Image (cartoon, rainbow, N blue to C red; front, side):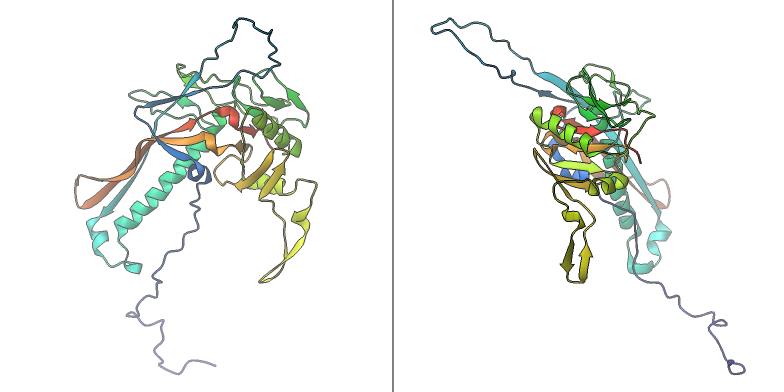
Length: 343
């Protein structure tokens, strides 16, 4: 078959209107699980501080009848602090671009601002959950907050279990646990120190084992915490789903509206100390499993996320989006981590 002689085809047409859908399809993830779960509080200075307290260890406490009151050791509170971190995004749209007809009849600046708002939340999640030290900053150096992983390591602070080998070895730094050669530094979290260094990663890693997770949960519970959340990256989310337990419900088949389903994931881990939701994170480090009591984590805002119109310097609109915030580890002993995991 062939086209009729002299047929006018679309290939010759120069006035055909384009066929462009009035929609945008974006796959970029926007979930910020840790930031979403954190409570919100107010900061009033660039160094935000708080205090933790504890009770004396229980004892027999057997006293002589009629004995005079004596002894009694007062336990002072501990003062912690974290620096406010400033994060910002910038959007510029020319007047011509805003004036032309766009697919979907969108307002280009509004669309750009919405995207920057989502991006800055992702940046906040990144800063909060990874392994960064705090810094007071200077006139030429930006302030930086200490993130979750930094708070979960240090003398008297952490409930930690490292990779390296499968053998759990107790260490003297508080109630920390390390397996093999784990993180090399134990930073101090005194509010008066110039900086808090994030733990140094070990070059030795090992597979995530249920024994590591059980030990960290046990340490958190013994310290008084109730860690309801296990946050892991995509690789170790699959490892958790393969943990052997008393029950094997994740291997059983069930019925759904679309037919028979094979359940191959675990979203809830039940330990001797309660139930723990397993939450996958695209942003936290895959080499670390965070075991979190979210009652003891919050984000303090010196200034909430906001947009500001910047003065014109030509034929373009400008918007500046920024936030000033920090992470509050109300009592780091409530939570823990398994570090140096294979990815």
